[in-house]
Image (tube, rainbow, N blue to C red; front, side):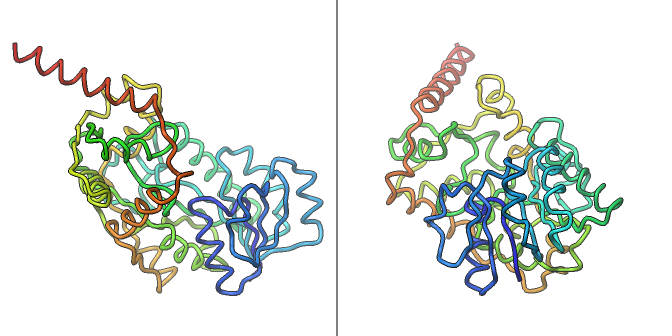
Length: 338
């Protein structure tokens, strides 16, 4: 199989890249080259900014692919560019959408590919929905061989999944746990969530590549395991060897008192209980099975952060904001009890 990835070095795509190379496929990566040194040998690099359409057209002038996958497209204009570049260059075009495009809040916590696409809370999700609509129009009207893939919360050893964090990633949450400070969990922490390790995601994704039954269709790739946000944070605390000090705060309150986009990431996503039905994926890729349990993958991610100084990005603004939220809620309780 001859494939081209636009991106190819992110949380989701890195494991797919590794798996394809391990299986001996011919893989091209089109990116700016910022993180290619972290990849195993074997990938062929087309170094360019995908937004430089004329340069990309030159680079692929004599190339054709079985699969082209774009991991860094977020708005319809980027898909219009991809259509111009690849409409005559590939037998399958895979767009990485998002499970946050599904109806929010859901009418049914069980999510299938037939669940309506509608998210009034998050512009990111609405843009993904618009991208899907554009691609399916090209498929219907021009036979563009599109497959839409919807990841949910996919993580790797480089990304510990926590519900509420600042703009610099999860490290400050882990540091607060180590220091015994209150760690904010949205809601009461009992909503169900699905975290999928990127190694498992890669197995499903590769199974969809050059799969004729996936053309013109959409499919999500997630683990079958559901855990609560309390469980996620308890696993992280145990991996750190500390006793957790959790502070449960309504998502609407967090949205109202922060400049972060908690309306989108919480009210439009993480605050809802969701359980994914992967029956469609398993019909398309019968060998698919997610084999990394949440407790296993989360421990691995925590250990990576503890052993990797460059992953320990402190966020003083988020730390101060968390302290302020905790203090305000404590004063509110004292005031009501007077």
